[in-house]
Length: 267
Length: 267
Image (cartoon, rainbow over all chains, first blue to last red; front, side, top):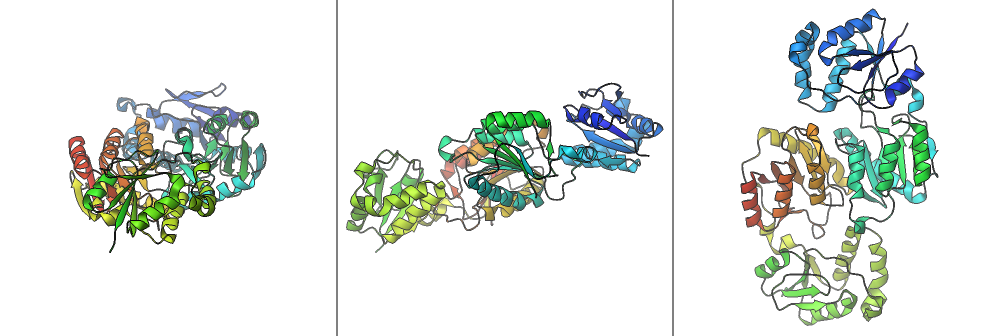
């Protein structure tokens, strides 16, 4: 029988998954803030061998990584034997690359240990909405035109492993998401000189081509809505089924209050 | 016989063109700062008919637009007949679009009047260097790898009329130029969280696909070098023959002092 363990970072997502699957084991990491309800079993990154044993002993078959996990400095003198002999050399090599490389390796390591690694959207499909209007009005004709342009830009870039998001306003591209993330993109857009602004653009969010949705799945939350409003945008459009909507009630309320539309479309 | 008129905006480019072609007519516009040496004939945007007549009377066959031209508010009560009857409706329509649309129309209007519109790089080919190292060392192996990635991103986006520039560092894309321009891109890169920085990236500059190089030709100058250095970059790579290098002596000196390489490559 399948049994899930939630490997928790910070934010509201891990508690939500715990509510959806109350039988799931709750795992935290020392030095990584998390808000899971008790009981939580806590481990050190240095003791991955111990973690694998604990999960297996308790019948865990599936794991989900959720929430933001910082990278605390590792203390090599504390490595357990599995970490020391099998994992550390690979992890150190991957840490030279991007965050994606490290996360891909962590997933591979859990899979080698026999666990099925699932995405948050698989544990709770309601996190990623089906096509439709989540808040505000349906898209206007001008917004639909901007969406066409945003999707063309996204499609052009997706094979390059760039651009989970972009902002288009009245046909002009005001910004393309790079590794700094959506909030940084929206702050950049908010600093655009007024003479280049021709309306109230939209933010489009979708995964890159062939992206493993268990890693860094595109996500929006109430803060995205606030930041988009401060950047003078009128809509957020997400790829249905491929984008996490965090804290959906608060997000919807925030969007209604600020006059933003939030729409999920088939991509 | 060809005779040139320089339609001047601000910056060092118009005086340089005037030095290259001392016989060229020097044209300024009221409300638009420019640094041409005298004699300069000054016109109002509202008096385009008067400008056309003056150019033709003086035997002008070719025009070059150079320097940054702001868009002062037009006073319709001052329009001359040509402006009022033939140009104003088209200009007003184009002003709803992007800067490119307006500039394309201005070029078309000058061509309809029988003038040949030339780019600054045609008037002074030395403005746009041939392939080679302009300053600093040739690219390292790591920089060559980042250049390959930057060119792939540029190539993917160029058909979308986006991205005269992008920044890549150790394989990661740190920013893509949108309508805010290169300096805004570099400021954005400089604000990247240190934990996402893995080295000293490079800026790649090249025109978009099918771009009319008489309009908004990619350009770098000493300020680009300074801003790139502040953003922690180690190199600027430009498309040879398709990118203007302004104030080249100062740019080279600045790059040497700050330890940046500036390299032109065949694109």
